[in-house]
Image (tube, rainbow, N blue to C red; front, side, top):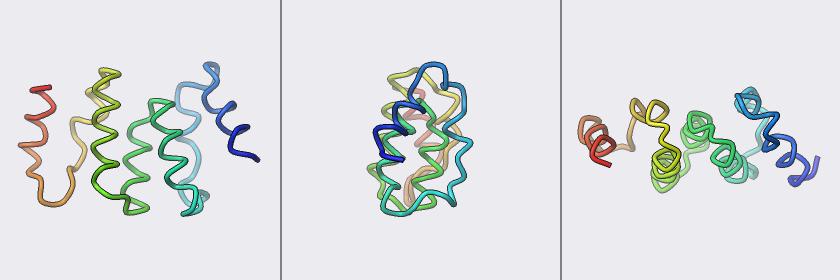
Length: 100
């Protein structure tokens, strides 16, 4: 299906509540990973976005985009226990979330 059709289906308010996260990551081609990442943020499915970052080895900026979007949505539960990028202390990461 064209990207526009997929977006209309998954971003329809009647579909919110987990339907996007039910898509198997194995079905997502690498060339669509960044598009699907953006779609997952629009759908407020931050754990799915995190899974995409890990599976497709997206750079750290994608991780921090998840954090920023989740904080705007006040979805602290989704991001509090995420493993931060390599080299970032988990306690420091969690404290920075609490500070924000």
